[in-house]
Length: 258
Image 1 (cartoon, helix red, strand yellow):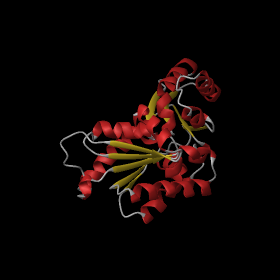
Image 2 (cartoon, rainbow, N blue to C red):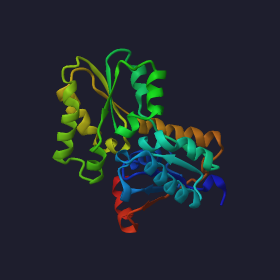
Image 3 (tube, rainbow, N blue to C red):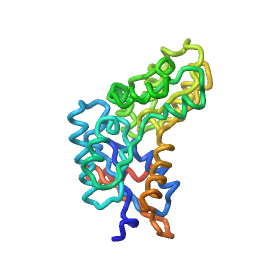
Image 4 (spheres, one colour):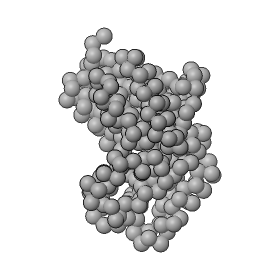
């Protein structure tokens, strides 16, 4: 097969990365895609570093053996832990995602920036270095949402338990004065963006604009494929294949999130 016509591979600990996949499909509808959800081991944010590394390479090997032309790590937790190792192992581009702190800080010179992410993400040096490079240390408030991805993984994005959890996590910032931005730092949370926005705007003071890294990541996929000469020349709409560590039956259900 012509390398240009090989599929683009995505993986995440569960359904969260489908939010990044969907945005990429919107930008590149003629590409073929393979998505691997490690749902049996979701979410990664609750696992230790060793387990995230092990599971990430299981996912990466699966996609590489399927003949993808690039791998997209559609998981903030995995990115912060394994992206360097994956780039060393695989002889294809490996694209990662990170919390959209940069666009939030560039748009708003003043005000607090709340970053909702897993404990693993906000405690990794990669994330800390990002905040330091932007000189936004005093404004960025990291919120460890250790169980939120697990709630989203259940598939009911309007569940009262999700709204209650968001309220609990944002309530301490009710009197902070000015929350200019809320950064979605886990791809699972993209599916509940409307709930996060609604709670933030009702509880907090400030613009509370939502920033989501999935948009920048999808654009980066386009840029990398252009630079590498890997954009498909297909004139018809491409296909999307879903796989899951939970098996084919569960993988078939993930199509509804695209």
